[in-house]
Length: 418
Image (cartoon, rainbow, N blue to C red; front, side):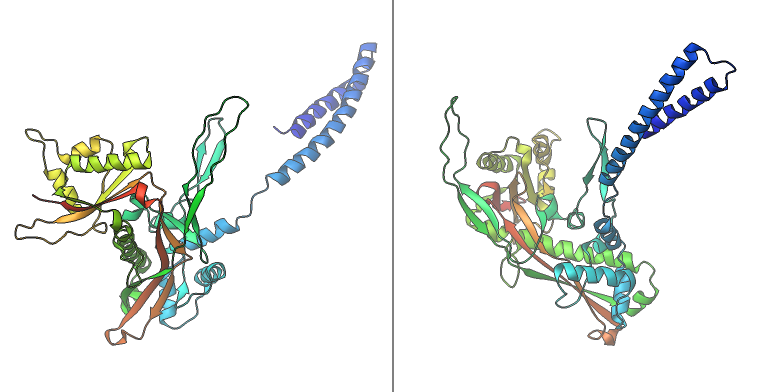
């Protein structure tokens, strides 16, 4: 109960008692004493009531409902209808309603689309979530914490995200500094100090690369399919995730591609030339744990091709039903397998081959840098003979890796069969 409400309730009780005393046929000395006491208390409480009301008004001003503009915009982005956007652009009509407002807002934030109309990342997120999650703190108060951003939610199921690659928004030509030397902990006695060593740094600036995804859609589907929006979300998201996963792990840096881990780590690649096994992976994971100064081996992430999964699971310890994969998991590792990580090498007549395995330590050292929202270009003319509409999606990204020498490893020629 508010302080002002408590005072008002007490004042009501005092008035009732004052009325009872005044209605009495005869007022005794004790009643007169009580009457004076009630009157003084009533007057003092009036002053307290006015002060309480002023304080409560000030508190209300502090806890007024915050501006919901950002939240409202994110909600509109989640409800963005890709099918309505495609239908309008197919017919050559201007966007209207929610789609027009969201696209215009994105153009104000990230600049006008170079080739198509801008649309939000949320439009490709199949799963929708609340803006905040509410948890209970140790003090018993409710505390709110933000959930994943639209980019994180979109790439949640990608191989890059599971490997620890973080998404980050960028504008212009950003520079990412990295300390290369001069840091360290010193121990001093009482009253003495430590001389500060000169800190050396380096910086990396990502380059904007345009990722292009193409998708053909029939005019009948645009007009008749009630599930078109869900289909577009799913298919465009899969195209984008697959292409960016390939860029993160296998990007060559040529032909307008970003340089992925395969290229960045090429100078420090380790030629294994042996069958994939628990001992081999543990050896290099331990080396990486030492160079990255990790406190727990489970902080080392391991990524390989699906054939690596099969090889480890099929290889059993002699006389047991325990596989090499079981041993790897029991040691605290959670390996990740994806076709985008590495492809099978050249196969021989017995289908033997090799692939590449990547390791990262600690996370937070590799980034997928993204410039603004994606764009969508609807072309109803180039495929007009077949009655189809060509959708072309553009996203602007690059891959940035820091501390590659100490926090990443690349194992080449890991044989899947021997």
